[in-house]
Image 1: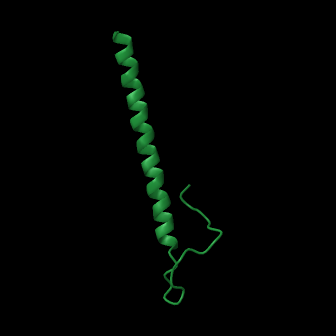
Image 2: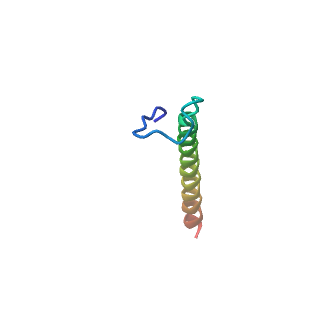
Image 3: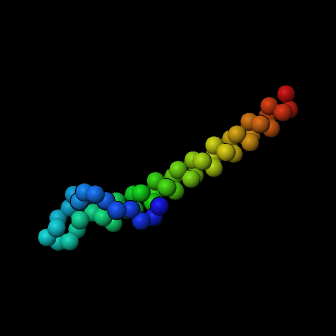
Length: 56
């Protein structure tokens, strides 16, 4: 998941070596962290919902 090959070249200035690959990889890593956090939050909500329904 951490290493991604891109089929296209991201926007950037090839003369200065700034092709944007580092930004794209960082963005993908942040999306992975965000999705994991959302998964944990929904799991915790499901556990809480289960306990709340059990008390009724």
